[in-house]
Length: 217
Ligand code: GAR
Image (cartoon, rainbow, N blue to C red; front, side, top):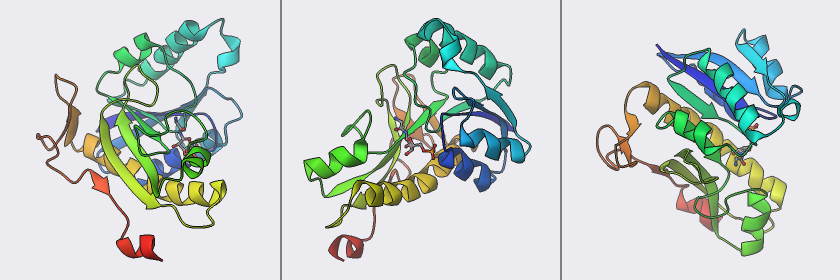
């Protein structure tokens, strides 16, 4: 059994998708939030999953919060830590502690649009393809070796909400998939920090692209 701790800050729909995927060989040991009122905590608690609320506002600085967060996480001895809408910049020490076992999902096709308001910025830039990325976390925000991406076409008349909804649907597909690979021992970082799937570089499909008819419709 691989033990997983999931960190959320809000709605928690990606966490929910991972929990609902019921991945064989995986145990969701805990869901931890930096916001005590995060909706995601209620879902997890209702499923009988341990929940921890660690309010970042109660800590003097980022380093103090991250140290407490690491202590809370380590109590569950996780094999994998999953950031699922965890909206905190993490210290280098924290990221290094979970080297090779810390995943994040970001709502853009990285390296385009790191940071916030990705859908608005994609519309403003006029990109034709947008999407989501699962990646291993490195100290630079929304950076790090890419595991899996899903692309959606930007449609005429799309607004931020419509585009966000289509991207979120893809997030809910690719994040459980990446976690499944990790749990199955098919996904890891090698010593040089490259993503290896099934023991090779790019030896498994690492991209999901919509059918061309969606682009043409
Ligand atoms: C998701 O769209 C996720 O990709 C994004 O926050 C949302 C959380 O939704 N994460 C980031 O922007 C990280 N930089 P959720 O709480 O329903 O999973």
